[in-house]
Image (cartoon, rainbow over all chains, first blue to last red; front, side):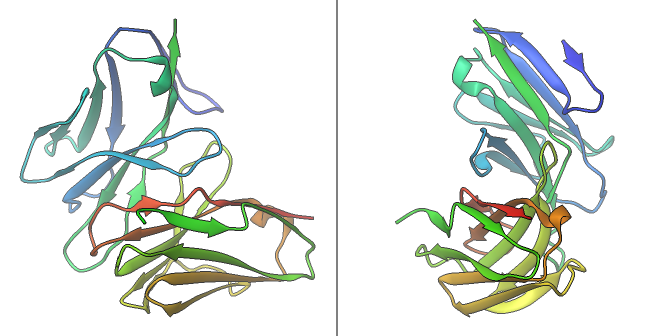
Length: 113
Length: 112
């Protein structure tokens, strides 16, 4: 389940289950979105991106859904593995004249065997 | 070479010291970035360079001074920092603006 508090929100799942990580973005003008994975001691690693002219994009074991009406993004990970344990950030950008990739608060995914 | 390389990986400095963080990429990317990340927080944008020119400064204090000597290198000069400036400093690059950012592993900075 999820827990929110002084620490990062955490999503705990069993190995093999599907995971869904949610993100609310702030700027209605944002038209480019990226999901990053950050493991301890490392920089953020690109997972998947989506532009605002799409509402769904699939990669290997991952799917990103975009709902512009409610400014919501989700990342779905199929058959979650222990190696998926990390902090996941959504990030938004606006192509209309400035290049500022702004990160959301992040969610920690904990995968249990 | 498909990496962003940051040096040093760890740095401890006193409040009166001057030090520099270095970032290098050889992918021909035209935009380079500095982000600051505190523990359990998302990366926060500090500076953006586009075609070797500073295009965004997110109201960063002047004790942080960026420099882009050429299209492959990005430096962050540090002077008179405070303990609250201790953080992970991340460099990133992208081929074009509004594109996928590729991050380095960061420099873990501790100010004592």
